Length: 338
Image 1: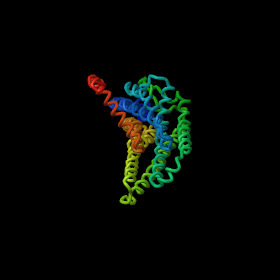
Image 2: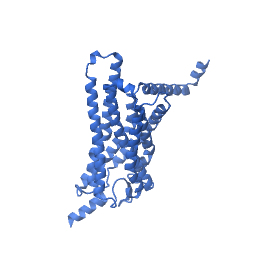
Image 3: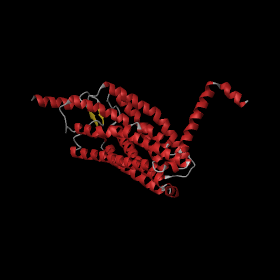
Image 4: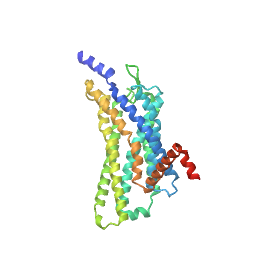
């Protein structure tokens, strides 16, 4: 009888317990992502769409990444409000499911596209002549369309069954995406989340394999390379590091903790250990914060893919600095006009 009461108390009252500091950290962190991510991705999208150079496969992937990141950060204020209210969703269940679907779309669009980018960069390093002669724009459009179709199709049931993802706890708080209704069978949930894990592991494997091949190619006959080739290979090496950083910082922590968290939600494991469940809940929220860093790391990745992008941001920064100086010192502008 004691065990039964303990299980009921833990499952229904204490599972959703999250440390107060986690709410503060999450709200602050998401605010930072919005402040940095919105202007960063708007500037990146403007450059990618307005650049007069011909369309390339890499550019198609960069535009796709930027659109996904921008959609995600635009909806982050909903999540900031959620954490500010200490885990209480005041909007509709449809808004909850829409944010959740954008979360998955952004996450797995980025994961799959980074795997594809790693492959095309390996080809650019190992077969530069063949890559220059064949732009593969059609392949870029087809792969991008397939990835978007896959991620949207995967997320569509979330929007359709939006009422299943908003629940009321004993504290009268409405929790968004923190549990699963009984309508969803445990088997169905496990299968979905196992597919998510496999998608990440497969993509990460592709990234690691291609990056190892890139590093191996870069290390061959370095002394015989011309200066221009050395610059290209140095940029390729930095790209390798940036892709690995995005995967390790943004995606690896979430996918390590998410499967464990799912098992706890479904009461498959340690359902009677409330302290452990609270700890996992806290770590899960932190991993979600880290996941969002890809929105501000992706534009940095573009800098290693094209010199024009770096030049564009350099000019943008100089223009911003010049305008700030003119606003503070109008006489300086009058002197220049004279």
